[in-house]
Length: 216
Ligand code: AMP
Image (cartoon, rainbow, N blue to C red; front, side, top):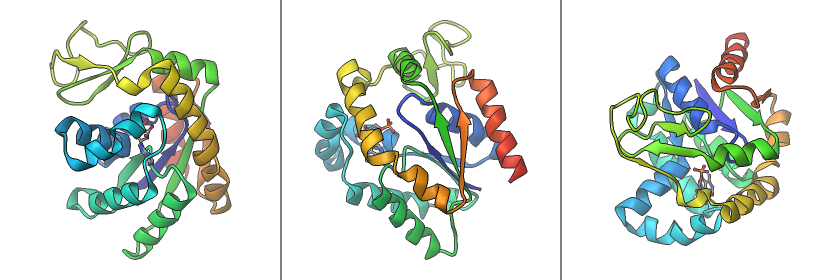
């Protein structure tokens, strides 16, 4: 199964991808996470993208397409994947389509997560993740069962994203509207798009996604 999650920052793409990858035994590919990892490691890519990400702008299509092409080649993607945060522009979507076509493959479903702006800001404001395994949490909506301890790996180190501050969030939402929202008609025309109301709780949204996948 090859899935794409589309939606603005805070709409739950990462959270839902983490749920589904366990259920379907497929890989979650988050370009944002790959780029943050490059910044943490201090490599050339990390140095190149750090300021762009801090400003809430999009990294160039060229970098993203190269990164995703390399990643999709790896054998763990043979079984399927969920793209979380990519494609973000029509150029990335076209590059992804031709890359998959060259392997006699294609995207199966695109799921758009719809959430009101007010809720997006509340969701982004409270989120944090486990530094050891990457599991995502939220102060209000998804605290760890035991305070200060990761439910998944037992780790005790957590961090918050530096681009989750109000000013950068505004820029990221603007980038979404200008550059990523045009992907909705792109995938609708291909008959691949399902839109779900992602205002509900995490489990309810997961159930809506599973329903779509089971009916497809
Ligand atoms: P995310 O974790 O998906 O919210 O992404 C965080 C940041 O990484 C974005 O604000 C962009 O600066 C960059 N980024 C992640 N994925 C992409 C992409 N597909 N295209 C361009 N920039 C991206």
